[in-house]
Amino acid sequence: MSDAHDNPRDRSLGRVTVLGGDRGGRYPHGNSLLVAGSEETLLIDPSLSLIGRASLPFTDRVLNSHCHEDHVAGNHLYPKAPLLLHEADLPGIRSLDAMMEIYGMSPRIAAAFRQVLVDDFHYTPRPDATAFRDGDVFDLGDVRVRVIHAPGHTRGHCVLHVEPEDVVYLGDIDLSSFGPYYGDAWSSLEDFERTLAQVREIDARWYATFHHIGVVEGRDAFLERIDRFAAVIGTRERRLVEFLAEPHTVDEIVKHRFVYRPGDPVPFADDVERRSMTQHLDRLLVAGRVEEVEAGRYRAR
Image (tube, rainbow, N blue to C red; front, top):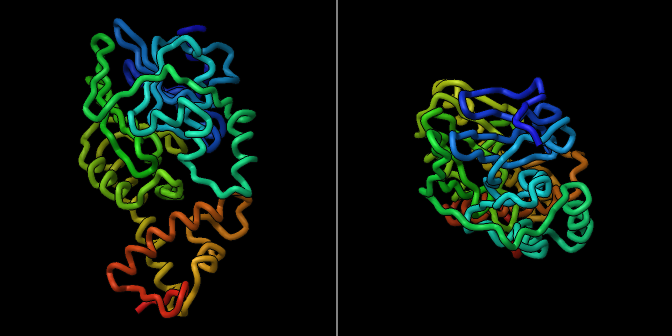
């Protein structure tokens, strides 16, 4: 292993280095974060892109912002480094069975995806992983990493504020045009909305994402991007209400596609559409904006 950062896509933000992922950090790749203090180094979310590097960055500890396949894909490169994960997502890294519970996939695709986790994302159980909690601070010597619990994407998803560099690592609040992802069994639309409101108030110099954007400089640019990112939720809900001008079943809602584009070759798209849009449907029913006109068929009021 080496301290050298030999990738031209890497970006230095003082004692923080954003390790640029392949394909611009697009899934399944991502941008890892290396934080170097005077006493200790911390690697956050080692991605698949680390595997192809000429030399691996050295780290004393590894931290996962949450337990999803692309964020733990490089953990196996550091088998002796202590591994840290928020307590709410900790079961997922301790066993493959628990990892699959996070997704909650239908049986027809679960077995195949389970193998993908092992073969393509190098999933390696870490029963030795230790938990952290909201507000915990990792003192690396002259540099501190503060944990901000930011659930919604997963139960344990966290944002990390590196001080005094003033870098906020957003994880999978990735500011992309795709918008927020809340399509797993351990996801929550309402938690994600609360998280977005909370994170919007964080004033920092730099904001780093795991996918796509990489680094955003300055609060004004960040606010523009996070507002556009959050607006996707409202767009999905508005489109659902428009679709329900005529009565439809949940299966028809799933087939119509509100999260993915029709025809996108995503094997788990039906599962994600169902979990995502039933959350919207449920709250529209509670709000009285949608009614069940007959068993299993819904229409906007």
